[in-house]
Amino acid sequence: MAFFDYSDGRLHVESVAADRIAEQLQTPVYCYSAAAIRHNYRAYTKQFNAQHALICYAVKANSNQAIISLLGQLGAGADVVSEGELRRVLLAGIPANKIVYSGVAKTATEMRFALQQDILQFNVESEQELEVLNQVALAAGKQAPVAFRINPDIDAGMNDLLRPSMYDAFHEILPVRPSGADKHSYQIVGPICETGDTFARDRELPIMKNGDLVAIMNSGAYGAVMASTYNTRPLVPEVLVDGENFAVIRKRPDYEDMINLDTAE
Image (cartoon, rainbow, N blue to C red; front, side, top):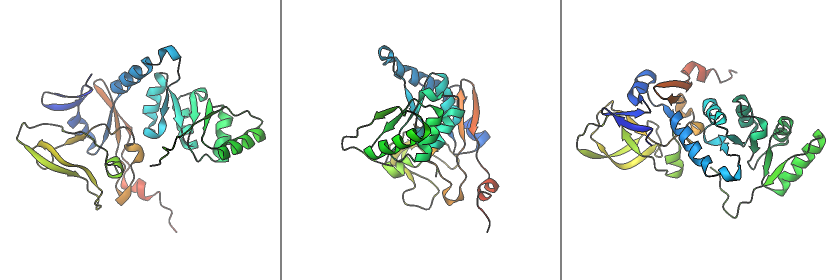
């Protein structure tokens, strides 16, 4: 089922033309399909029907309230790795009894807050963490529900779209309005003065001219959530498409908002 496809020579997200969004909000912009999220979640959960499993969405992949809320409405729980993520999830409407707390660097303060919310469980990742959690739970008069996560020698850690630079991740790149012209090999780069600011190398695309739009696909997970204001560039807005409509679910900040975050001496 195609949720990002061409119609009348224009790339569409569901029933909304991508260049319509770009014209209204300027570029770049993160654009998500509500129908794609619903379809993929339901297809995934279908495989676990017999087990009565709770599917917990990893909030670190995309922590936008609208995305969390949409998944919560579908029945998803949440997997969080910080108190901030836990607060986001609760505000988005996912109940505490559907929340698991993962991560290797939980503080005693974060543990205490999670215990107060009566979350489903803590995913404990070390003996030392278990000892701290036990002390916090005893002091609070609580019993901490735990599960042990075992990493068999595979543990690892980890702007607008950082994944290609950090991981050499492959993202399909599509012209928003394909011209049908002969193809040309392009280096797709960004505006940052860094050698790593490259999205793709040697990609075959129809001959492009100044102002033509391209879509970098499959960037919803670990995309906007890892973006930064490096070079004092505003964060990219996020859009959620649902059928023939779209809504801005995170606006682009203006320069005054960004600069006012600094504290004058």
